[in-house]
Length: 205
Image (cartoon, rainbow, N blue to C red; front, top):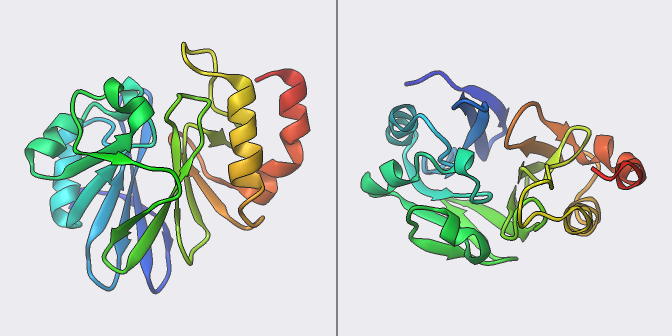
């Protein structure tokens, strides 16, 4: 199996991570330890590597945190391999193709795991985070990073919207010890980032 880093594991779940592509995207594979089935978050790039991981870890579905080009380069390859790809309606047109629409406050199941969907617009209109119920795991895509929100200089991005998403849907909803696993770079926690919200608002990015 291709080398991955295990970012988290307990009796129910393990999270594998591999970094791919020219802007070093994190791709996460969330595996149910009881069933052996997995969910892949962001089919970003290096499709041969991701397809190998999909086979080895029994990936049943792919979900996209948003539709930016660097997060979707392997979408067609995983769909060709028979794996469904899901994305929010607001970002669906950014993908070359997809199978399912992700709705806010719904649940994606993988084996015995339940993965909650959290709409967090701002970086893109359809940005979404994913939380594994019963664990401290929150996959934040490009919405929240160590040190601040994702980039809002793109067309269709909005700083006020991403701040509201972070404040209401993440800081207001998750405990301080929640692990935040972003789309690029290192992870952090809700407790580490939430005290700095006012600073981010003041600086404007």
